[in-house]
Image (cartoon, rainbow, N blue to C red; front, side, top):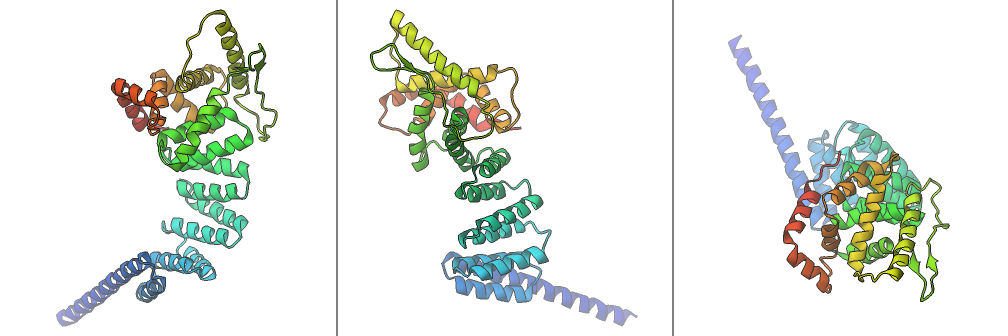
Amino acid sequence: MKIKNLISLLLTLVISITTFGQTSTAKDLIREGITFHDAGQYKKAIKKYKKAFEIDSTNVLVLYEMGYSSYMLKDYDGTILLCKKAIHRFPDSKTLKQVFTLYANTLDVTGKPREAMDVYDQAISKFPSHYMLHFNKAITAYNLKDYYEARVAFQASAKLNPRHASSVYYLGIIEDIFGNKISAILALSRFMILEPEGDRAQKILPFLTKQVNKLPAKKTGNSNTFTLEINNSRLDTMPNEFQSIEMSMSLLGVLGNALSGIEKKQKKTELQDFSSNFKTIIEMIDGIEKKTEGFNSEYLIPFFTQLEKKNHTTSFTYHINSFENKIKEVKKWIKNNDEDLKKYYSFAGNYSFK
């Protein structure tokens, strides 16, 4: 009995060691494949992945990596087959997040964006809290000019990852396309906080400044005529939750211009106007007794309301302009208000989105 037990134990150890060696070898082959992939040698990478799969056919990562290298070789049919195989064989694997994304991207580049949308929906049903699935779906919908679907998906990705700049960037663009002035301002202001420098910021900053500063009505030429911008070309079929505020801002502009004719008014700079107008917008939003449900009320409005109440609006204004080195006004303000800026950074960096 002792000899039989010893033989049995030795056999178990041999099998365990062999299995461990195989698993370890498969992992080594995957690593080698990834190295080849990163070097642009996709065919060599695929050979490594195939050998790894022969050793360990329970590793979903092999199928994903093989599919990714096939994608880079523009073998889109092969990529789709590998993605389908991974989804079918490993329905509970977390790696399917990447597999679904690869699958949908492949459908998108092969001219099947509607099918890609279906794949994203399938993926989101399995991984609803993975923000990149919502974001990628939103990009596909955006490219299809399905702006309603894109808006919902961008909002979902922004709520799941409040510091994802691209989500609010595209959301702001969509709101502007729809003709929702204040919704666009809020989203693009949040974007500028998250990404105050770079190509996108350089394009958005002057646009955002103009949008905020043109909300109040302006005097036309030397006459006593004031121009109220009422957005009749609004494309969104959903109600404009900020319509009353847009009208109020216009009327405030009329009042301000009228008073300036009675008493001498100190001329403000463009940035001072922006800060003042932005502050007024947030105060008006906060003053609305009945707030509607939705992304703005749950995500953007609480953030900017707190920013205003803690007196960070001016710091916010100069921060988003701080990468425009040609503006002497900005350099001077930052030099003289270092402590205020630090408090603003602390607020923006540590704000907790519920």
